[in-house]
Image (cartoon, rainbow, N blue to C red):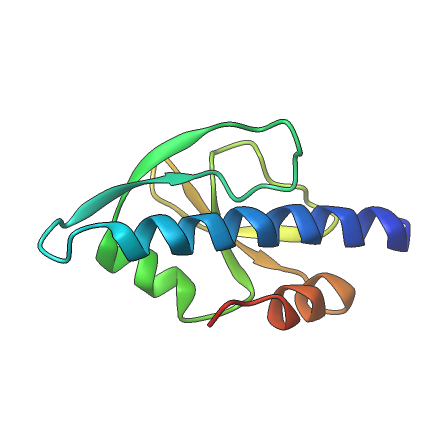
Length: 107
């Protein structure tokens, strides 16, 4: 996959991750769930799903992990590592995809 496309996908995912960080930040601390945006690389995706705060914090513990809707993964740059039914957790592949995920991590 060409470098520019990998970069665009990674930047799109980073934007959605930052939005989810903001949503999580305004979710009341006693609330065990919140609605997250799909963090896939598609510019036109508007998908959402409910995720528990604990699951979200698990994903955020590793900057190479993202939460997306099933079927939204791009195998050339990421692999599904967990399937939670309403969403999946993907890990960016080593090299440029993983590097970009780490340098754009808000945490």
